[in-house]
Structures are given as structure tokens and as C-alpha cells.
Length: 207
Image 1: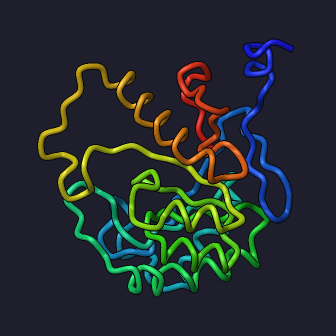
Image 2: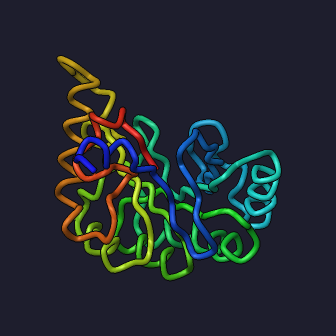
């Protein structure tokens, strides 16, 4: 099979502890923010019991992944210390891993949080910093988890200050290709659903 044929035949998938989630079609990720200041639900699910109940409801409504966030990444959001983020997400992750029949993801870029939640059974790290924070790549490489690489200019506090692109699609693809290529030698499988460095060839397919 030619390289182009192999690329065409490759199908993104998420392997997790209880099975395999095919990503050959769009899947719904249910976002569960256990924060006081996130976009639409900040403050609603700070209580772990309410958070878990809402996660079950999202799965019943069709969510294929539940993504737990303990630090808001909305424009202008303030940074949260790793220990506070862990205190917010860990009780929820522990219960969801036991109770849900879908993969549990955690939205974080901090190495300490990555280690804590993957030790608890999280299957996916959804990182808006794309493994640029200190120790994040090492933490993911040491864990049995998948990684979703995201893009932003700067950080949440500054990303809307003066964003500039000459060609937004091309520049975002180049950034993600670079991050995937840089992470690939350390990881067991291609991160973020990217077959090698073929993000542009595959239309920007993400896990």
C-alpha cells in the first residue's frame, strides 16, 4: 500500500480502558466545568454530586466522552494553582471513571493535574496549551492516556488581547502539526487523532 493509501485507510480512534471509541464520524463531547467562572455553566456543578449527576444526564443524551474542567480557559480567566484544580476535578473524575460507560477526559495543561487524573483513570487529556506547560509532555508520556492538542495564541488571560493571523487555517494547522511532531517520539500513538504529521492531509481530524 502506498503512503497516501495508508493515510486514507487510517481511521482515528480513542483506545481506553473499557474499549475502543471509533472517531470516524463526529462524536459529542459533554463538557463538565467544575469551576466558578467558566462560560455557560460556571458555578453550577461545583458540588461533586451535582457534577456527576449532570455527567450521567449528558451521556443519556448522547455524549460519547465527558470532559471535566477545573480551570476556566475563557478569555480573561485567571490562572488556578495545580492543587486547587486537583481538588476540584479529582473527586468527580474518580466517580465518573467508576460509573460511566464512556471515556472520561480532563481539560488541563498542568503536569501535576495530568498525573493525578490519569492515575485515577482518566482516558484523555484535553490540553489547550498543547503540551507546552512544564512537565506536561513527560506526564502524558508516563500515563496510559490519549492526548488532544488544542490551539490558542498566548494564554487565556491574553489570547483575545490582539490576536492576528495572515491565514488562520494554515497557521493553526502548522502549529498543531508542529506540536504533534514534537510529541510523537515520546508517545505510543499519534496525538490528537493525527496520523503522523498529516494534519493538513486529513482535514484537521481531532480525537
